[in-house]
Length: 269
Image 1 (cartoon, rainbow, N blue to C red):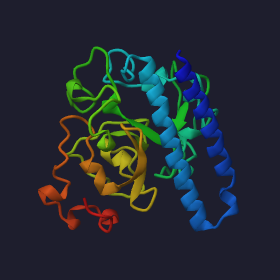
Image 2: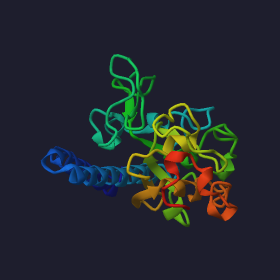
Image 3: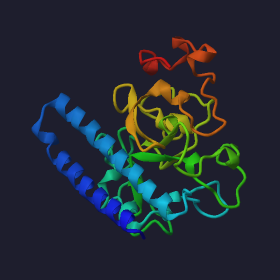
């Protein structure tokens, strides 16, 4: 491990502590202030995850996670260091607007899942004693699978990104709010019909969730982080062959009435 990497890890610990302090202060402001503070903490979390991924790729010859061997990149979380993987120690796994896991520590699933819940708690070999849980997902096309020719959904592995040194990185999603720890969007996928129940739907529906009034927060391959309008998700460059002028964009003539009712008043793309 290089001295630069050690310093980056120390910086992340400091910022995570500051984010935790900000969470403690949320109760001291009004509803509007609490909302803005939650969004600020969420964006801070995503920036820190960008640095965590930068550390990983720096230590791994520029390459991203592979996931379990023989899969399209599943279970990338197993390759994180334990200090980052453990959701009990690393609270940056959670947007403050979605901090309660879908499944509790006794294995009981909530009877009313909704977009303001975190995914998990998932338990499997290699995930550590506490399992994993969180509010965010990795863009699955960042992963470099071993012994697989396609990602989930059939996108060729050759169309994935594999690392962070990318042209136009500000339009390539890296890590974002979602209902699973990885997502694999395709430009033909539709948004969820029901605003609050996208748990069993497609990858785009799992991140097209109305947590922040028509938007979610996301980190990008250039390590920036910002709010993203939900309709804008179809214009981001998820993988090399993703059509950013696909059927759900204004370039292809999508109409306001084509969107589910809950999305129609959101900013068009």
